[in-house]
Image 1: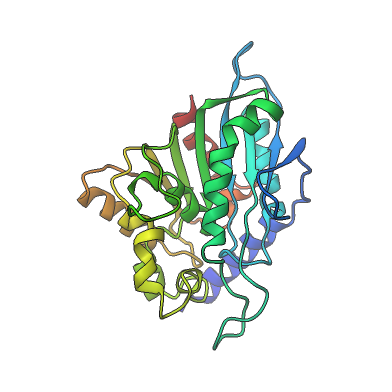
Image 2: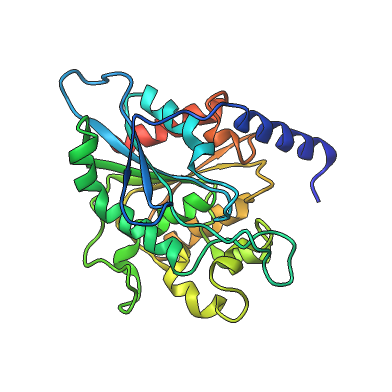
Length: 294
């Protein structure tokens, strides 16, 4: 159990991150017929290199894949990146039901297979949508970032070429990405499950006890390595929501697969400063993205 000081700091960090008003996008496009199949586009607010197109940052929000959290809560972070000169695509996707999980009191985390259907469809449609609606962006310089559950989805999206042959989301070659910056990602489902991260969210995402082991090879990024795509994890050492051990386990799995994954550990930082424009940690995240994008 965290001590009182750590719990108080975590609460203050969460309050700060959610205190920012939502920032409306410059445009919103659909990548499917469902109301949640949307992408918000943010035009770069500054021209970093005069006369050139901006790198494209794809943002996947967190919230334990649960319905209560949508892309609006990460819109200040998307705007923060746009003010750093990036073009930003913030992806919405179908999340869990508001109906409590069996045997639990909270809402279900994620939908199988719809959550994965949507992330795959959004990434596949994105280059064309960008050419039509975000002309300031260069889709050839694309970095995916995601926070928490969105960090999981970012790692998973970069590993689709490693999915089992019968996976509907498998692609024949690595995605055309400059890299992945995963923020406190739920990157190892076995470790996350043992630590009961977000109230057993990973197990719920895969359909509960009966389906967890069967579906892990299709969903767990720690089993989909090496990706061959530059990947950095950014993790607060004081994170009580997705503990450091989860990120470390993913990095260890990558190393065993022969791949070096960057792991940036931030002292006295918890879960939410990584997407809080008022926090120093958010500037670190932007720099990590810039190192891959430029």
